[in-house]
Amino acid sequence: MKSASTPPRVSVIVVNYKSYEPLRLCLRSILESDYPDYEVIVVDSLTQNIESKVREEFNDPRIKVIHFDTNIGASASHNIGALASDPRSKYLIFMDNDVIVTPSAISQLVKSMEERPHIGVLQAKVVSRSNNGRMDHTGLGLDVAGTWVTTYGHVAEAFSRPMEIFAASSAFMMTRRELYFEALGFDDTYFIYDDDTDYSWRVRLQGYAVAYEPRAIVYHEDKFENRLRYDKLYFGFRNRLLNVLKNLEAGNMIVSIMSILFLAYLNILMLCLSLRGREAYAYLRATMNILSTIPWRLTQRKIVQRRRRVSDRVFFKKGLLRRDLLGTVIMLRALLARYFAENRSSNARGQ
Image (cartoon, rainbow, N blue to C red; front, side, top):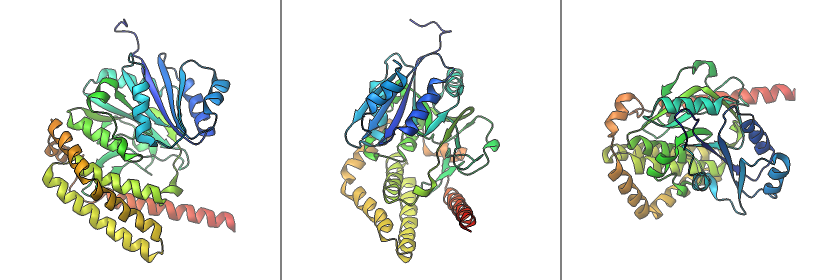
């Protein structure tokens, strides 16, 4: 039995897909951590010979690999990693394979969680590796269209104080292992994207806080060029609809869904005018998927709402949920600014 002064055990769950080089750098950074008691669980899809590669390069008993010959998605990978974690672990860390962890990051998260038992999920300070000196995503709040009010693209130095946030990013976040099971884990029907927002939201509905810890710093590869990719548009839009369908109270849910659909179909029009029919179809297909699975989705909603301990009113009062389009406007402006900046840089290199 551990004494009160013994650091609690942590299980670090790394989601990996069809790659080894980013994972290699990620694992090396984790193993340089100053935290004394942790295990690393790599949940992999489709990377050939990953078990032998990890064993040959690292030969570390703290690392175990769970491999699948099909793409099971990030959401299911999170759940499988949690189920495979050491029952003695007090905390779970979920992270992406393209994250570089600073030596003190795990220690800082544990310290903060130990000091504040009301926190259910804690996110590290995730700094972009490709957008130098800028923040990656942290979910400060959600607007009426289900879009994050986010730190994305802002100067990293501006976010130097701990604060409450609405939803953490699974690029690098910690949760209490016992709470993970109490909250029923991640929804693996999401497959990828926004499952972390859904999990954070359900943790909040259980009465726990979600927070940001700036002393725990990690660096994440920001794949800006993938933001108009078909699967990202499909899962991003579908899962945003699922988030509000499952987690908002009825009146707020209806308003939010109407707002999301209105903006989505404006996007469809713009994509069609830009001759990007495949991307436009992603929105239509996502809508059809929701409609075809509506009985199951309503059952999920009933389960979430019956377990609710906190009303939407509390989140609106704190500004964590909003009745405006602030997140949508800010995100669009940030993406356009980044897009034009990268285009200017590419044109300058080409001259």
